[in-house]
Structures are given as structure tokens and as C-alpha cells.
Length: 268
Image 1 (tube, rainbow, N blue to C red):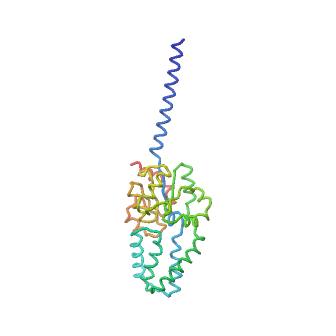
Image 2: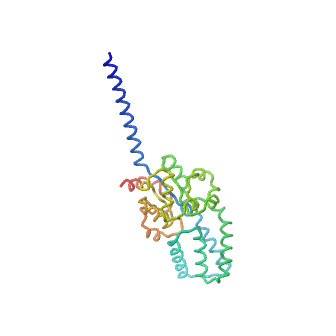
């Protein structure tokens, strides 16, 4: 009788250990195969980049500026060079100042143009919208337990101005937004994605970085993350390709139908 009790107890302990081992192995495999996403904000999730075109149209009209195809190409190249330099909080002002100088505005005209551009920007921000497919993407990520975060060079106040119009999306992103106030060094420096990795608890090499700028792609590549360039921002497809992302999509709406390709690329 005692031997039977001992045998029964040992069997139950063995069975319990086996179940714990199986459960632990399953959990470990889930963690190994888990991926997360880090998104840029402007030009990736939010259609705020068109404000630049509105500013350009209004200022050209005010100062009677006429351009031709050659000058527009030179302006595009100028913008790209500045964007490909230091990524800092006054980048927009630096770009506009260079463009105003290029089109022949005097020093004082440039000062007034910057003030007017800032006024137009503040007027247009409440009118912006999120890109088509954004809500569906985050619903998909939530339903399939893909963690995510935002890494943006906008300030926390600027993020609030952009996202408060979309409370459903904003609530999903609470505590997951890395703004320029969160870090000491901006993209393409990896500080933002390193912080995002801690927030979403995903290793850097299991993260998918999605953005419209070279700085997003370079940040991701610098830490071994998978990168997706989207064509909804400032840069053309040719410029995005120059940054050599793993994928180039027309927009973030293409992430869901390509999720298996994305996972396959990371696992390989």
C-alpha cells in the first residue's frame, strides 16, 4: 500500500513537471517568435505632410513666386539634403528658410515668411487626418497581440495636438509614445528604438520599424531591426529605396496583407 502511494505521488509529480515543462516551452517559443512594431507618426500614421504643400502654395502666392521644373527639382534636392543631415526639432524651419532663400526672398522676407508659415501650420493641424487603414492596422495588431510603440521627433505637446482628434487611437498609444522630449538624441540615433524595445518588451532584432523618412530606416538598420519604408511622406520611392529598407509599401495599410512575409523575413 505504501509503495502504491509513493508510486502514485511520484507519478503525479512527474506529470506536473511535464506539464510545467510543456507550458514553459510553449511560452518560450511564443516569446522567441514574438515581434513588435515601432511606427513613425507624421507621414506614416498621420497625413500631416500635405501641410507643407499648403504653406508653399500660400507663400508663393503672397510673394508672387513663379518656379519652373528645373527650380522645383533643385528645391526637392535641397530638401532631401537637409533631411538627410541632422534630424532636430527645428528641422522644418531650417528647410523652409533654405527654400525661401533659394526662391529669392530677402532676409526680412524670409523672417516674415517663417512667421506666416507657422501661422498656417497651426491653422491646418486641426484639419489633418490619419491615413486610410490606420485604425484597421492597430485593431489587427491588438487582436493578434503584436505590441507596438511610436517613435517621433515631434514634442509631446505636438503629438497631443495631432492625436487628440483621434481619441480611440490616442488611447491605444498612451504610454507607448517616444517623443523628442523622451530622448536626448533624435533619429537616426538608436536611442528612440532602444527605449521602444524596453516599453514593448521585444528584442531589437524582433522589431519592425515603419516610417517615411531615411532617419526611420537608418535607426532600424543600426540595431538589426526589420525596416519598412512607406511612400505617404516627404520622400519619393527612389529616395526611400536609397535607404535600403527591407520592404517598401505604398502605405501602412499594406502591413496586414504582408504580415507573413514580414514575419518570415525576421525569422530568417
